[in-house]
Length: 145
Image (tube, rainbow, N blue to C red):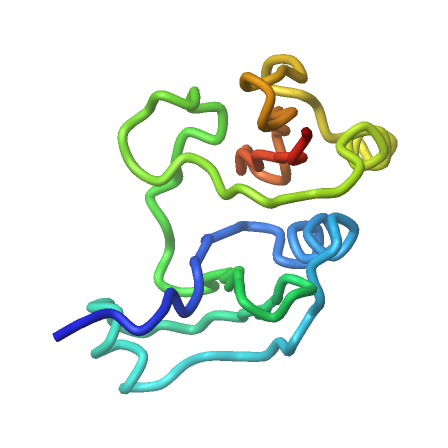
């Protein structure tokens, strides 16, 4: 058995509209959105009484997808929206960008903040972490050289 490809990464959010808007501003394309509920969802995710809304976004090259989910029911336990980058678990999603300075400026104009600072990895990349909606850490990477 072998993996064919990564299908998508799922992120649970409280404000689906704001999160969708953030990732569209970043350059992802909204592929669709809508409700998800019923016994089949309950069985798949291992919860009872699931009622959720999802938004599926895709990278411009068509190879990467991001699923944002807002659970209306059952209620959530919450989480640490300000957990640092070294907290165990999935902590960030990374995107390649062409003009990292322009992307950061655009995100800052919408209220996003750098987690640390814009840095350079050898002669390969300029990188930074940005705190997105609900504490989602987004890594931006611009290939150089």
